[in-house]
Length: 420
Image (tube, rainbow, N blue to C red; front, side, top):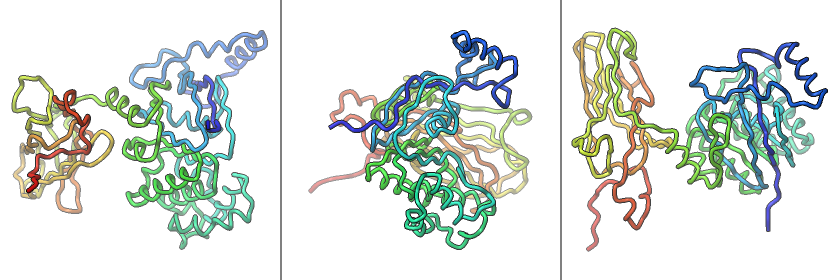
């Protein structure tokens, strides 16, 4: 039995004028009107450039989304992934009817609740209680329906003490907890959630993902945008990969995520800076280098699961006798922290220092990894931190002949495991 289509997008595009606020100038509007009056195509639709932030614009116009078509059925959970500027948020605004497409058509069946940014749809002068009722009314719910869900929303958001306080006095965390509680509990047929969950702490994010799973289990549709591949993989059955405003891939979540990671994540095995020029850091610490050093260079820059390697950092301590320790974080490309390890805190002389971390063979799985590095003064004081410092891929040379395919997990340590 086929499921009912609740969202159908047909060749939708969204164009913006660069460097301007509004729709353009009077002369442009007159040219557009004259073209349409003669039955011609809008002349400015032909000159828009692709939405690639890395290149200098050659036109006054840019396509944030270009010629996208898809269908979403009732009960589907779909994740939308892509780098910043890929068009994800613009697509959600089109689906939420915050803005209209420049070209194409979107057909939607059902009530939509959207959480596109912190406090979407909230009036800052109204209290939390008043905003709950206002949002429910906007969604088409009766006062009786909202009252029935009211206590559950407040309990989920954890803002009972402040429910009669104007939301302009809420912290960003309180704001997003209440906004998500309203969007998820007022029973929309379609729930659209952007990367706002990054505002909350880990406990709240887990709570939100649990609620979205609950919403999906009741046959409602969820569209979820996130840079957290683990969250997308855990929640969504399918995914859409956008790049420069266009659909690159759409299909099962695992397949689309693997395609995205293989295309977008590039190896960066060495970075060096000049102390007197562009070295990152501050008046306490300057980072001079970060590099991955292989035991053997026979295979070039290839790191295999069966080979050991070193990760070495060079830095300059600017304060004599300063207490310093390095805190190393290793993440998979999908955002899972594999481990965190730190050096012993010690007082360092002013000048150049280095630190080396040994990664043994048969520890990491075949995957793409990124490194974050913190320079810490004590347990509560960070001198300097840098994220996505290095990126490297570990490959499995035996993958093609192994019966198991890709080994599950972020690590695959060679441990003693026997049967007697």
